[in-house]
Image (cartoon, rainbow, N blue to C red; front, side, top):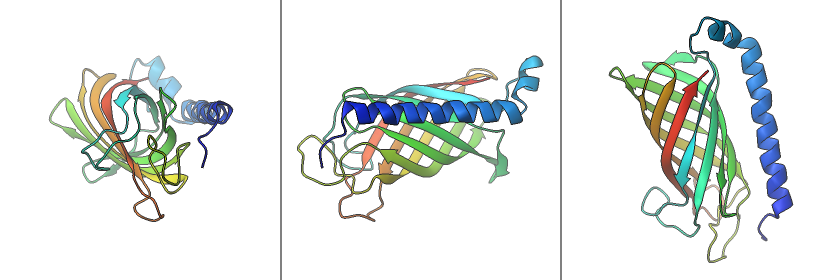
Length: 196
């Protein structure tokens, strides 16, 4: 299958950005964001983003074919509901490769728990739609088997204060062997978070 054209990638990125803008509007309108900001308190809206190494070998997927770095941007919505000692809330985001390799947009259920006063651990499960290859055998592209993949993020972070955080972020995408090809992709890097 030929790689997606620049025009197709541009439409995908524009679609993701439009979705994020829509979700920000919904969250700001119904999540108490304006009231919290007026009182100088963090709202229920949080944005996180950073730079990730792309297709990192020797992690979950096991090997690497693609290259470059990724820009990750994510929106966490709502204050969350209590679940297993932490909170569970929706996350929507995108990870865009800087060299034209596989990029994706995703939506997750994200569970996060505090560790002590300043640290936190986040785990998630969701779905990602990507613009990469489905079948083999290009020498510099992963064969991902399906257009929609499972998205599994893991994050270990440190809260600098009530609004700001930094974290180590890992994400894995694959089809869990539900398709003929399942080479999977792993990304890892650093993110900064801000609560509005």
